[in-house]
Length: 436
Image 1 (tube, rainbow, N blue to C red):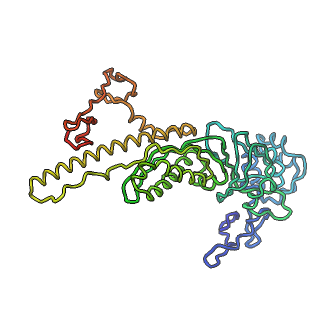
Image 2 (cartoon, rainbow, N blue to C red; image 1 turned 180 degrees about the vertical axis):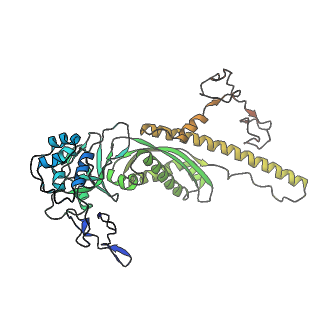
């Protein structure tokens, strides 16, 4: 079906070798009927965001050949009383041949300027208009850039700060991606949306990567990348479209992209190399990747790169024999030591995850994005819980805000073998494997 036909069941598009070809003639602006099947074509003003009263008038009169030609008085008198005053003031006094003639005459009065009046500090914002009308004004503030994006997501014309009039000369790339206009037809409609940017705004991308080395050792890296948009057109096509042109989506997409880049690089190195030089290795490859997206990496910093568990445990005792008490005791000690090492590594992971959540929360606050439920949960987990009534309290509190009892920090356990301290819930020493 042709998407520009009004009539249901239009089959003027043809199948040729399994591919759709020979599009309907009403894909061209300015036709009243499709030359292939005769169905009614969409009027050129159908997709323009006009005031409701204007749209209602145009659809009521569309196709009514008996009403036209019509004077201004005839048009105004056909309206309800609540709409008459606005049309009487804004509609020029002359004779109109069709609804398109009325739409064009009202365009300057009815079409608001395209601009972004920021209410929050954002990274990217897409204007809700899906079509732009010739003569409509585009206003770009001093700290903004605009890229016009076609209906297929292609980045077209770019605008710096200033005031512009939408036309075929100011928007040649978007015009080429829009419906063709019949020769002599004056009412060009460009099919696309303006996407606004803050080119000078810096924002942070949280870096949390779990991967493996060339020899399949498990490794984890955490850090943060501080960036800003340097090539808006490239950024729109690479990230903006995938993120649905909103700040939270952009941050999530960049986190996934960064993790994929770092994982692939980890597989090219051994653990010793990553442990000693992983920050520079991963930072270099990630910086190049961010530049390919149209971003300028101001600082890429991996604060920690190292092995994580489970995955690295003491070796199993050799020559374990079934029914041998000595072998059984060796197996028991080995299992306890393995479990203790696993618990210690788990604590390390939890601490890294906490740091990542804090970095992500800071990045979202800088981008004007409200913290998610996951971020709020992490903040709650960082509070001190009262042992008497289980009420969460701030870390700085000394007494419970609910029952007034002292908030006593949990006592650490000391290993009787090596002396290392562990949290009270730990059952085996993470250093030597002794049961606590």
